[in-house]
Image (cartoon, rainbow, N blue to C red):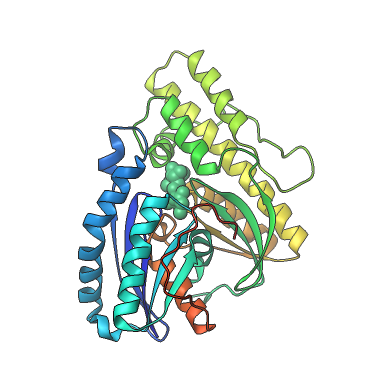
Length: 335
Ligand code: KG4
Ligand code: ZN
Protein backbone atom coordinates (compact mmCIF):
# COMPACT_ATOMS: atom_id res chain seq x y z
CA UNK A 1 0.00 0.00 0.00
CA UNK A 2 1.40 3.42 -1.00
CA UNK A 3 0.17 6.34 1.06
CA UNK A 4 0.76 10.02 0.47
CA UNK A 5 1.13 11.97 3.72
CA UNK A 6 0.50 15.70 4.09
CA UNK A 7 1.46 17.82 7.11
CA UNK A 8 0.42 21.49 7.35
CA UNK A 9 -0.49 21.99 11.02
CA UNK A 10 1.88 24.86 11.72
CA UNK A 11 4.83 26.39 9.86
CA UNK A 12 6.22 23.42 7.92
CA UNK A 13 4.77 22.03 4.72
CA UNK A 14 5.63 18.32 4.75
CA UNK A 15 4.87 15.70 2.11
CA UNK A 16 5.95 12.05 1.90
CA UNK A 17 5.08 8.69 0.41
CA UNK A 18 5.17 5.65 2.68
CA UNK A 19 5.01 2.21 1.12
CA UNK A 20 3.95 -0.60 3.49
CA UNK A 21 6.21 -3.00 1.52
CA UNK A 22 9.22 -0.81 0.75
CA UNK A 23 9.15 1.74 3.60
CA UNK A 24 9.61 5.45 3.11
CA UNK A 25 9.83 6.16 -0.64
CA UNK A 26 10.36 9.93 -0.63
CA UNK A 27 9.78 12.95 1.53
CA UNK A 28 10.06 16.71 1.17
CA UNK A 29 9.77 19.56 3.62
CA UNK A 30 9.45 23.27 3.18
CA UNK A 31 10.03 25.32 6.32
CA UNK A 32 8.46 28.76 6.69
CA UNK A 33 10.99 29.86 9.32
CA UNK A 34 12.32 32.77 7.24
CA UNK A 35 8.79 34.01 6.57
CA UNK A 36 7.88 34.27 10.28
CA UNK A 37 11.32 35.26 11.64
CA UNK A 38 10.75 39.02 11.51
CA UNK A 39 7.55 38.65 13.61
CA UNK A 40 9.28 36.53 16.29
CA UNK A 41 6.67 33.76 15.99
CA UNK A 42 4.26 32.05 13.61
CA UNK A 43 1.67 34.37 11.99
CA UNK A 44 -1.29 32.04 11.27
CA UNK A 45 -2.61 33.84 8.16
CA UNK A 46 0.84 33.96 6.55
CA UNK A 47 1.32 30.29 7.37
CA UNK A 48 -1.94 29.30 5.61
CA UNK A 49 -1.08 31.31 2.51
CA UNK A 50 2.38 29.82 2.28
CA UNK A 51 1.01 26.28 2.59
CA UNK A 52 -1.31 27.12 -0.35
CA UNK A 53 1.72 28.20 -2.38
CA UNK A 54 4.01 25.31 -1.51
CA UNK A 55 1.84 22.23 -1.04
CA UNK A 56 1.04 21.15 -4.62
CA UNK A 57 4.59 21.72 -5.93
CA UNK A 58 5.88 19.63 -3.00
CA UNK A 59 3.38 16.85 -3.77
CA UNK A 60 4.62 16.79 -7.39
CA UNK A 61 8.26 16.82 -6.28
CA UNK A 62 7.75 14.00 -3.76
CA UNK A 63 5.91 11.77 -6.24
CA UNK A 64 8.63 12.39 -8.86
CA UNK A 65 11.35 11.49 -6.33
CA UNK A 66 9.48 8.31 -5.42
CA UNK A 67 9.14 7.46 -9.14
CA UNK A 68 5.35 7.30 -8.73
CA UNK A 69 2.34 8.94 -10.30
CA UNK A 70 -0.88 9.83 -8.52
CA UNK A 71 -2.54 6.69 -9.93
CA UNK A 72 -0.10 4.55 -7.89
CA UNK A 73 -1.44 5.91 -4.60
CA UNK A 74 -3.67 3.76 -2.41
CA UNK A 75 -4.60 6.49 0.06
CA UNK A 76 -3.96 10.05 1.18
CA UNK A 77 -3.28 10.84 4.85
CA UNK A 78 -3.27 14.33 6.28
CA UNK A 79 -2.88 16.06 9.63
CA UNK A 80 -6.39 16.98 10.76
CA UNK A 81 -5.33 18.53 14.09
CA UNK A 82 -4.34 19.78 16.51
CA UNK A 83 -2.87 22.91 14.93
CA UNK A 84 -3.68 26.26 13.31
CA UNK A 85 -7.11 25.97 11.74
CA UNK A 86 -6.32 27.78 8.47
CA UNK A 87 -3.09 25.85 8.00
CA UNK A 88 -4.82 22.54 8.72
CA UNK A 89 -7.58 23.35 6.23
CA UNK A 90 -5.07 23.74 3.39
CA UNK A 91 -3.70 20.23 3.93
CA UNK A 92 -7.15 18.75 4.53
CA UNK A 93 -8.60 20.40 1.41
CA UNK A 94 -5.81 19.18 -0.86
CA UNK A 95 -5.72 15.68 0.67
CA UNK A 96 -9.50 15.21 0.50
CA UNK A 97 -9.71 16.54 -3.05
CA UNK A 98 -6.89 14.29 -4.24
CA UNK A 99 -8.42 11.26 -2.53
CA UNK A 100 -11.80 12.01 -4.09
CA UNK A 101 -10.36 12.56 -7.58
CA UNK A 102 -8.23 9.41 -7.37
CA UNK A 103 -11.04 7.40 -5.78
CA UNK A 104 -8.86 6.27 -2.87
CA UNK A 105 -9.53 6.64 0.86
CA UNK A 106 -8.50 9.71 2.82
CA UNK A 107 -7.43 9.36 6.42
CA UNK A 108 -7.29 12.05 9.08
CA UNK A 109 -4.23 11.73 11.31
CA UNK A 110 -3.73 13.21 14.77
CA UNK A 111 -0.51 15.26 14.64
CA UNK A 112 0.74 13.89 17.97
CA UNK A 113 0.04 10.30 16.92
CA UNK A 114 2.22 11.07 13.90
CA UNK A 115 5.02 12.22 16.21
CA UNK A 116 4.47 9.27 18.52
CA UNK A 117 4.83 6.74 15.70
CA UNK A 118 7.82 8.47 14.05
CA UNK A 119 10.36 6.37 16.02
CA UNK A 120 8.84 3.30 14.30
CA UNK A 121 9.10 4.79 10.83
CA UNK A 122 12.54 3.50 9.99
CA UNK A 123 14.14 0.18 10.86
CA UNK A 124 17.06 0.29 13.24
CA UNK A 125 19.62 -1.90 11.40
CA UNK A 126 20.93 -3.36 14.67
CA UNK A 127 17.94 -3.54 17.00
CA UNK A 128 15.00 -3.56 14.58
CA UNK A 129 11.87 -1.53 15.19
CA UNK A 130 10.73 -0.90 18.76
CA UNK A 131 7.53 -2.83 19.39
CA UNK A 132 4.75 -1.90 21.81
CA UNK A 133 4.26 -1.98 24.71
CA UNK A 134 6.47 1.05 25.35
CA UNK A 135 6.43 4.47 26.95
CA UNK A 136 6.52 7.48 24.61
CA UNK A 137 7.84 10.87 25.61
CA UNK A 138 6.23 13.47 23.33
CA UNK A 139 8.09 16.76 23.56
CA UNK A 140 7.16 19.40 21.02
CA UNK A 141 6.40 23.10 20.90
CA UNK A 142 2.79 22.48 21.92
CA UNK A 143 2.93 19.26 23.97
CA UNK A 144 4.86 17.53 26.70
CA UNK A 145 3.31 14.17 27.44
CA UNK A 146 4.23 10.73 28.69
CA UNK A 147 2.06 8.11 27.02
CA UNK A 148 1.83 4.36 27.64
CA UNK A 149 1.46 2.73 24.23
CA UNK A 150 -0.06 -0.68 24.84
CA UNK A 151 -0.61 -1.38 21.15
CA UNK A 152 -0.70 0.95 18.14
CA UNK A 153 -3.90 2.95 18.52
CA UNK A 154 -4.22 2.33 22.28
CA UNK A 155 -2.72 5.21 24.18
CA UNK A 156 -2.91 5.95 27.90
CA UNK A 157 -1.81 9.37 29.11
CA UNK A 158 0.52 8.97 32.10
CA UNK A 159 1.45 12.61 32.60
CA UNK A 160 1.65 15.97 30.86
CA UNK A 161 2.67 19.57 31.35
CA UNK A 162 0.45 21.74 33.50
CA UNK A 163 1.63 24.93 31.75
CA UNK A 164 4.34 25.44 29.07
CA UNK A 165 5.42 22.60 26.80
CA UNK A 166 9.15 21.77 26.84
CA UNK A 167 9.68 23.22 23.34
CA UNK A 168 7.70 26.32 24.28
CA UNK A 169 9.94 26.75 27.35
CA UNK A 170 13.01 26.51 25.07
CA UNK A 171 11.52 29.06 22.66
CA UNK A 172 10.40 31.55 25.33
CA UNK A 173 13.67 31.29 27.25
CA UNK A 174 15.64 31.87 24.06
CA UNK A 175 13.52 34.91 23.27
CA UNK A 176 13.99 36.50 26.68
CA UNK A 177 17.77 36.20 26.25
CA UNK A 178 17.50 37.90 22.87
CA UNK A 179 18.02 34.89 20.60
CA UNK A 180 16.30 35.01 17.20
CA UNK A 181 13.24 32.92 16.27
CA UNK A 182 12.96 29.93 16.31
CA UNK A 183 14.69 29.93 19.67
CA UNK A 184 14.80 26.26 20.77
CA UNK A 185 17.51 25.00 18.42
CA UNK A 186 19.46 28.29 18.84
CA UNK A 187 19.39 27.96 22.61
CA UNK A 188 20.56 24.34 22.34
CA UNK A 189 23.42 25.42 20.06
CA UNK A 190 24.41 28.18 22.50
CA UNK A 191 24.33 25.71 25.42
CA UNK A 192 27.09 23.76 23.64
CA UNK A 193 29.41 26.67 24.43
CA UNK A 194 28.19 26.95 28.04
CA UNK A 195 29.81 25.47 31.14
CA UNK A 196 27.73 23.10 33.26
CA UNK A 197 27.01 24.03 36.87
CA UNK A 198 27.67 27.78 36.61
CA UNK A 199 23.91 28.35 36.76
CA UNK A 200 21.80 25.69 38.45
CA UNK A 201 18.06 25.89 37.94
CA UNK A 202 15.36 23.83 39.64
CA UNK A 203 14.17 20.48 38.24
CA UNK A 204 10.45 21.36 38.52
CA UNK A 205 8.08 18.86 40.15
CA UNK A 206 10.72 16.15 40.59
CA UNK A 207 10.70 16.44 44.40
CA UNK A 208 7.24 14.89 44.66
CA UNK A 209 5.63 11.80 43.15
CA UNK A 210 3.80 12.05 39.84
CA UNK A 211 4.41 12.24 36.11
CA UNK A 212 3.23 15.77 35.31
CA UNK A 213 5.54 18.62 34.31
CA UNK A 214 5.67 22.38 34.79
CA UNK A 215 8.15 24.50 32.88
CA UNK A 216 6.86 28.06 33.21
CA UNK A 217 8.64 28.71 36.54
CA UNK A 218 11.95 27.69 35.00
CA UNK A 219 11.56 30.39 32.39
CA UNK A 220 11.06 32.98 35.15
CA UNK A 221 14.19 31.73 36.96
CA UNK A 222 16.18 32.20 33.77
CA UNK A 223 14.75 35.69 33.29
CA UNK A 224 15.91 36.71 36.79
CA UNK A 225 19.34 35.15 36.29
CA UNK A 226 19.71 36.90 32.93
CA UNK A 227 18.55 40.30 34.24
CA UNK A 228 20.92 40.10 37.20
CA UNK A 229 23.90 38.97 35.12
CA UNK A 230 26.62 40.89 33.27
CA UNK A 231 24.92 39.76 30.00
CA UNK A 232 28.27 38.77 28.51
CA UNK A 233 28.24 36.19 25.70
CA UNK A 234 29.82 33.51 27.92
CA UNK A 235 27.27 34.19 30.68
CA UNK A 236 24.45 33.77 28.20
CA UNK A 237 25.92 30.45 27.07
CA UNK A 238 26.32 29.32 30.70
CA UNK A 239 22.68 30.22 31.44
CA UNK A 240 21.58 28.37 28.29
CA UNK A 241 23.52 25.32 29.49
CA UNK A 242 21.98 25.57 32.98
CA UNK A 243 18.49 25.79 31.47
CA UNK A 244 19.04 22.90 29.06
CA UNK A 245 20.45 20.70 31.83
CA UNK A 246 17.41 21.45 34.02
CA UNK A 247 14.94 20.52 31.26
CA UNK A 248 16.86 17.42 30.21
CA UNK A 249 17.28 16.18 33.78
CA UNK A 250 13.59 16.80 34.56
CA UNK A 251 12.47 14.91 31.45
CA UNK A 252 14.86 12.03 32.19
CA UNK A 253 13.69 11.67 35.81
CA UNK A 254 10.04 11.53 34.71
CA UNK A 255 10.80 9.06 31.90
CA UNK A 256 12.37 6.67 34.41
CA UNK A 257 9.34 7.01 36.67
CA UNK A 258 6.99 6.41 33.75
CA UNK A 259 8.87 3.27 32.68
CA UNK A 260 8.60 1.98 36.24
CA UNK A 261 4.90 2.85 36.45
CA UNK A 262 4.09 1.18 33.13
CA UNK A 263 6.37 -1.81 33.74
CA UNK A 264 8.17 -1.25 30.40
CA UNK A 265 11.82 -1.15 29.41
CA UNK A 266 11.38 0.51 26.02
CA UNK A 267 11.14 4.28 25.68
CA UNK A 268 10.50 6.13 22.44
CA UNK A 269 10.99 9.87 22.13
CA UNK A 270 9.31 12.10 19.59
CA UNK A 271 8.56 15.74 18.82
CA UNK A 272 10.89 18.65 18.10
CA UNK A 273 12.71 18.62 21.44
CA UNK A 274 13.62 14.99 20.68
CA UNK A 275 16.21 16.49 18.30
CA UNK A 276 18.08 17.88 21.32
CA UNK A 277 21.49 16.21 21.49
CA UNK A 278 21.88 16.38 25.25
CA UNK A 279 18.42 14.87 25.81
CA UNK A 280 19.26 12.04 23.42
CA UNK A 281 22.56 11.33 25.19
CA UNK A 282 20.99 11.48 28.66
CA UNK A 283 18.17 9.09 27.76
CA UNK A 284 20.62 6.68 26.07
CA UNK A 285 22.49 6.61 29.37
CA UNK A 286 19.26 5.95 31.31
CA UNK A 287 18.36 3.09 28.95
CA UNK A 288 21.84 1.58 29.24
CA UNK A 289 21.73 1.67 33.03
CA UNK A 290 18.31 -0.01 33.12
CA UNK A 291 19.26 -2.60 30.50
CA UNK A 292 16.41 -1.21 28.39
CA UNK A 293 16.17 0.60 25.11
CA UNK A 294 15.43 4.11 23.86
CA UNK A 295 14.52 4.94 20.25
CA UNK A 296 14.42 8.31 18.53
CA UNK A 297 13.48 9.20 14.99
CA UNK A 298 16.37 10.73 13.06
CA UNK A 299 16.51 14.44 14.07
CA UNK A 300 14.84 15.47 10.80
CA UNK A 301 11.77 13.37 11.72
CA UNK A 302 11.62 14.67 15.31
CA UNK A 303 10.29 18.02 14.12
CA UNK A 304 7.18 18.32 11.95
CA UNK A 305 7.31 16.33 8.71
CA UNK A 306 5.13 14.53 6.18
CA UNK A 307 6.80 11.12 6.65
CA UNK A 308 5.28 10.55 10.10
CA UNK A 309 1.82 11.42 8.75
CA UNK A 310 2.17 9.08 5.73
CA UNK A 311 3.32 6.31 8.11
CA UNK A 312 0.56 6.84 10.71
CA UNK A 313 -1.99 7.05 7.86
CA UNK A 314 -0.73 3.82 6.31
CA UNK A 315 -1.14 2.01 9.64
CA UNK A 316 -4.68 3.38 10.00
CA UNK A 317 -5.61 2.41 6.44
CA UNK A 318 -4.17 -1.08 6.97
CA UNK A 319 -6.43 -1.29 10.02
CA UNK A 320 -9.38 -0.41 7.77
CA UNK A 321 -9.93 3.13 9.04
CA UNK A 322 -10.80 6.12 6.86
CA UNK A 323 -13.45 8.83 6.67
CA UNK A 324 -16.30 10.19 4.60
CA UNK A 325 -15.66 12.92 2.04
CA UNK A 326 -16.20 16.04 4.15
CA UNK A 327 -13.27 18.40 4.74
CA UNK A 328 -12.99 18.64 8.52
CA UNK A 329 -10.18 19.68 10.79
CA UNK A 330 -9.92 19.63 14.59
CA UNK A 331 -7.69 22.46 15.82
CA UNK A 332 -8.02 21.25 19.44
CA UNK A 333 -8.00 17.49 19.73
CA UNK A 334 -7.05 15.02 22.47
CA UNK A 335 -5.23 11.94 21.24
O1 KG4 B 1 7.35 18.95 16.84
P1 KG4 B 1 7.68 20.32 16.41
O2 KG4 B 1 8.44 20.51 15.12
O3 KG4 B 1 6.42 21.23 16.29
C1 KG4 B 1 5.34 21.13 17.13
O4 KG4 B 1 4.45 20.29 16.86
O5 KG4 B 1 5.37 21.88 18.12
O6 KG4 B 1 8.51 20.96 17.63
C2 KG4 B 1 9.01 22.24 17.59
C3 KG4 B 1 9.63 22.54 18.93
C4 KG4 B 1 10.00 24.01 19.06
O7 KG4 B 1 9.54 24.48 20.31
C5 KG4 B 1 11.53 23.98 19.00
O8 KG4 B 1 12.12 25.02 19.72
C6 KG4 B 1 11.85 22.65 19.60
O9 KG4 B 1 10.84 21.79 19.11
N1 KG4 B 1 13.19 22.17 19.18
C7 KG4 B 1 14.23 22.01 20.04
C8 KG4 B 1 15.32 21.54 19.26
N2 KG4 B 1 14.91 21.47 17.95
C9 KG4 B 1 13.60 21.83 17.93
N3 KG4 B 1 14.32 22.18 21.36
C10 KG4 B 1 15.50 21.90 21.95
N4 KG4 B 1 16.59 21.48 21.27
C11 KG4 B 1 16.55 21.28 19.94
N5 KG4 B 1 17.63 20.86 19.29
ZN1 ZN C 1 4.74 18.74 15.82
